[in-house]
Image (cartoon, rainbow, N blue to C red; front, side):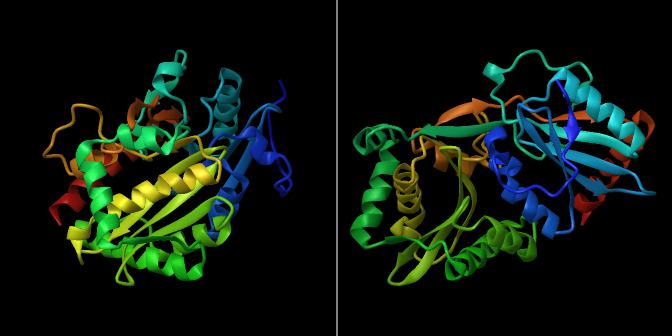
Amino acid sequence: MTISFIKEPIENKGYDDKVIHPLQSYLWGKAREKMGTRVMHLTDGKNNYQLTLHPLFFGYKLGYLPRSITPSTPILNFLKEWGLKNKIIFIKIEPYTEKSESKTIDPRLKISDHPLFPSWTQILDIDKPEEELLKNMHQKTRYNIRLAQKKGVVIKEESNDKGFKIFADLYFETCRRQKYYGHNLNYHKTVWENLKNNISHIMIAYYNNIPLAAYELFFFKKRLYYVYGGTSLLHRNVMAANLLMWESIRFGKKIGATKFDMWGSLPPGYDQSHDWAGFTRFKEGYGCKFVEMVGSYDLIVNPTLYTIYGLAHKIRSLVLKMK
């Protein structure tokens, strides 16, 4: 097995054949590069791995390897040796591997104290007839879908710049309402402009021509992903979001998806008072299966600076909570 970085600028000619998730795709890498993030492409001939580098202090950096296959021992050996030569403190690795399908995790990988992806998601098998999908939903979810249809809610796929603007307005309205501070508009716009109509799609729910809910969906390797969503406080009684999710499922079936990954969730038996309980319950209503992923790990390259980084991260988190 020969492991190496792809040093020349790559073209999307067979690159995606060797990755499994949209965050490892060629187009995602191009989007990250346009944001000024350094992107590295590692290959062992069989699988490609897309790694981003993020500056910290005094020239030191951390690496991030999201949603690849679980790296093999030779890949980890290569990354450790490369990291030592290139002032990498650690590399965060979050494989797209279900825990039930994983083998023993390399002992050099430390469970991350600061995961970016939740360990649990919900996945819906949409390679079934619509009648069966409806039957498997919770009764209240079916009722809300039919109520929205009866009220005249209209769902449109608007994977264009107009649709993105509507989505962005609703998404950031929701972020402000829920006091969630994620990526800024430039980040989302760059992702959209690079992934639109290939990986990224916009779905919008209207009531009396007023947009009430919007989703940005990713489609990759026969799998649909619910990545971002936003809703309005207007006309909550027409259940627009319920119909929007159902029509997103139907859209996924239409374009060839067989699975629908809801991107993140609390685990089964979750605390109903948890901040995430609402959207976990909403996703659960569609008959999804709770799936535990292998989790988030850190490949520690510089143990001393890794400890300092961890302490600084804890202090920063405490200061933000006090504000």
